[in-house]
Length: 127
Image (tube, rainbow, N blue to C red):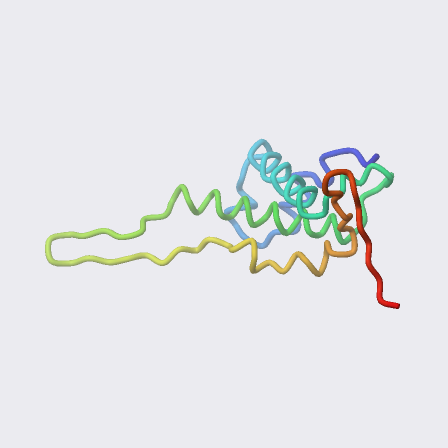
């Protein structure tokens, strides 16, 4: 079984070009990595127990997700949606990274395992 965590905070900092992510503490990045790994496990229904080493595509997906989680967490703490001063007001647009927009399916679809329903797995193929 591949040891968790699959990536280290140093790898995330090295990969990321976002200053807010590079400045995050290792403790916070460890949490971001754990969230990213759990997302991958939930998406694929695969614990990668049969692998001694995590495939490169899965590791890349975890890096991308951990960076996005780190960015979103640091931006959520700083964001102001709108503010009004007497006769002047402004609204700041959100800078959150959408997880759906990361297109992780291309990296993870090869590792998805069929999840049995009520103990039965049905596989169909074209004749």
